[in-house]
Structures are given as C-alpha cells and as structure tokens.
Image (cartoon, rainbow, N blue to C red; front, side):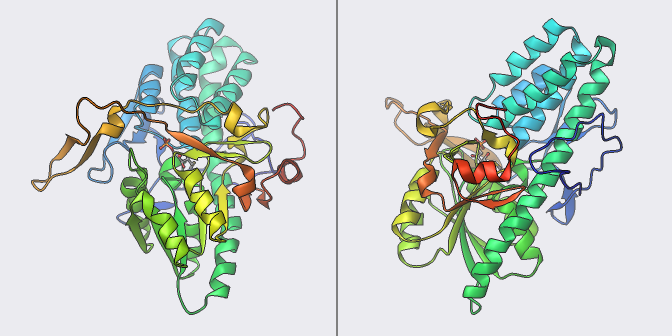
Length: 391
Ligand code: MRU
C-alpha cells in the first residue's frame, strides 16, 4: 500500500510509474476494488452499486458520457470514488477529443453530475491542470496515469485513516474489556464509497482485523438506504458484527448507553471543520452531543474545501429526484427486485441529499495525517502548506 510521501501532498502519475493495484476488501472471500481498468487498458470497470446488495454486477464505462451517467445515477457514489470516477471520465474524454475545448467541455459535463462532494472538483481540477500543461498528443496517456495515481493515492489515504482511527476504537476497547465496542455509522463511508478500505469504516476494518471485539449499528439511511444495502453488505463481507437500525433509532440507543462512539464519513469539510455528509448526519451529531457520545468524521484531504469557512451557508446541497423519497426498491419473495410506491401519488416530496454538522458538534476529524480537532487550527496543523484562501 503506498504511503503518502508527505501529508497533504499529491504524487502525480507521471512521477510514479508502476502503480500497485493491491485489493484489500472482500466479497464472499474475493478481494475487490470499486473501480479498475478493464483488460483493454482503456475502458473502466466499476461495481454497479445500484444493484447491491441483491446482485453483484459490474458495468463498463467506455466514454466520458458513460462516466458522467454512472456518477449521476449513483452506479458509483461516495465522495472519494466520485472523484476517481470523474478523473477516469476525463481520461476517457481525452480519447474522444484531446483539444482544450474538448477538455473544458468534459470537465463541465462531469462536474455538474453531483454538486456536493469536494472530491469531484478536486480530482477534475487536478486532471485539467495537468493536462493543460501536457502536449495534445500525450494527453490521453497522461490522463490515465494521473487518474490511476489519484486512485492509488486514495487507497493509501484511506488505509492511513484506518490506522489512525483504529487507535480510537482500541482505546474504547480498553475502557470496556468485558464487551464489544459499539460504533454507530451513517450512510456508506466504506470501501464502496472509495477505491478501497473506506473512510469511516476503514478504522473499523483495521481494528476488527487486529482482533478488537466490536459491533456496528448501521443506520439504514433513507431515502436511498446506503446503510442497509451497502454498509451492511460490506460488513457481512468482512465478517464484522453489525445490526441495521431505522434512522430514527440512534438517539434512543445513545440514551441507553448502547453507543460508545459514532464515526461518519464526509462529502465536504470546510477549513473550519464543518462536516457535510449524508442527510441525517446532523441529527446524529446532536443526539451524540446530548448524550456525551464522541462523534468523529473521517475523510481524506481531498474532501477538505479550503476555500470555504461556513458549511451551512456555503456548501451546495444536492437535491435529488423526489421519487427516491416516495418509492423504495427491494427483493421480493420470488427473488426479483421490485420498486414500490410508499407515499400517495398526490403528495409533494423533497429529497435533500446532504446536511451540514457544524464543527462544534464534531469531537475530532480523522484524516490520512492523523486525528485533529475540527477547527481551522487543527486542520492547518495537519496540512500546513495550504494557502489561506483555497488550494
Ligand atoms: O450520496 P452518496 O451515497 O454518494 O453519499 C455518500 C455519503 O454521504 C458518504 O457518507 C460520504 O461520501 C462519505 S465518503 C466515504
């Protein structure tokens, strides 16, 4: 697993040939990543997350349009994975039209697929900057190398998040040697949301592999149910004890001492430590504060938006199709997957996909560089090279 050369810095694909593609996470005993180059070395293969947990299927992305569609339809999702898929989308675009105009058009098309996660813009900016500095005839190769470098870097960062965060879980285990540590998580911030390992779930995987007794409360995470479908699927694959709960159950569990700590992922974190994550995260943080339960957010540095100060006012919140609220899909008794309607046809519905947890409710942030307070000072201590106003 490549370690970051220095916290918060990037290693470009050109500077690091021979990228490794070790796969760490398991489905039925086989190791996978979420995204990889197909046998032709050009097309991009992804796990189709809209089919999980009931069907394991992959999709092949052959064009930048395919990549854009896969991101907006949530075939691939999760902030770090969206960034990597966007980067490969630009690489596919360079095979279609490697002019500056082609680059800018593909950048715009990919950027508008999902507005909230920082990682998408971060990855697209990085690719565009590097391709603008590359002669046209070399852009295609360069784009694949850089997208591959981002994927490797994300893996290294998530693995490091896992190591740092596992220390928090091990400390909790020392306080409760007589029983398993109970951890609550929201949505899916596991390996399916990244290339490998995950963010919030990486510390859980690391601790579990070291033999720490733990149990995970999995918020179902309406409306798309990424907790019940994806997090539960991942934890099953890794053999980690877990229980799926209705989103509304967390407060009750915390009141009764059944949660030792919460760990969530993040889609965008401001430089002051405000955490934007899947809708419902904020309510969990409020309940955690009321009940004295530590609340951690885990993210790689590509999720930090150094330009933003006030998450509630500044972070764009994606609104998705209201049908995701009014309808639900699942496995029927005959083994087919069906979608059914929950709400009356005449009712209005709104689908806010994310919310912002102000930094004051976050016990600490876990990044590839370690654990820091959710403050500007805390983040700058981990990433000292960042200019005051942005990247
Ligand atoms: O809408 P999604 O499924 O892309 O949202 C995912 C989340 O909110 C995750 O918690 C987030 O991306 C954390 S990053 C691993």
